[in-house]
Image (cartoon, rainbow, N blue to C red; front, top):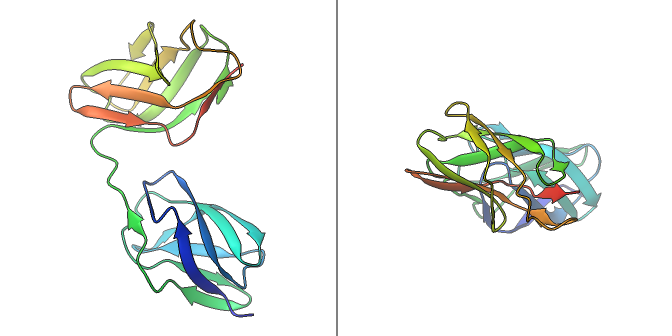
Length: 168
């Protein structure tokens, strides 16, 4: 069956977020290209009609292409890449930890930092290292086994992590 790209779920996302693509003819390996010549990250073929992929940096709103041994399929509609804004949380290390543990957070726009939250819980110990790196302690009141987005707020706005932090 030829490779086809029919639908995105969700229909828009920011770089660093995962989306599902529905279509046909998906086999391993399948590559995904976003408009702007940006290769999809961590493409996972779920079955012959669905795959998941992380939207890469540099992706632009436009046509998405999937390619494999069955050929190349192009979307008939555009995928929308959302503007992440001036503050961006890209990743953090480690991806899980206990309350009180220091977490290194990477992104951009951290200048003029005001606060860091793990879900609704305010981090009290924050070291603003640079415009792209900060270190924050997991709040002591964050519930064990919870999955929380990390949100950084500065004078210029705020940004949330694309993935959840797991409180051990």
